[in-house]
Image (cartoon, rainbow, N blue to C red):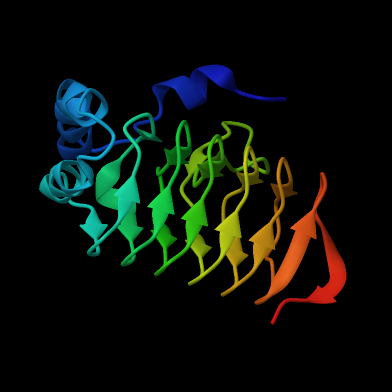
Length: 179
């Protein structure tokens, strides 16, 4: 039987994390309301909140980021309109990777084997030159290899090898390997 009351009583965040989340919520309009071409401003703001952000990163103003201090963005990567980076755990997006509009990277879950369903924070890794297409979902503890593609609206709940295309819900790997 699920013990909802025990889950609700559990302390999921340290006081420091709670305070940082409040400060990020207050600063978020400074991220969201600046015009789209102000890439440098958003990079600077993310760095102020502990994110690792490489040069020439393009992150759109409508991107939703839960905890920027758990985020690492490699040089020249891009995160498109309305993408969700639910960074309860670490999310690393490597160099030149693209996260398209509406994609959802979810680095958080619950331990289903425990009746109190405690929060877990498994990482996500998106390899260099990978592409997470429009409205795709990448779940916790998933690695998308270098040059791989997760197709539009696909659901990746397992790893995607390098230079492979994954499509569907749940994902299926295509036979074709990318160059």
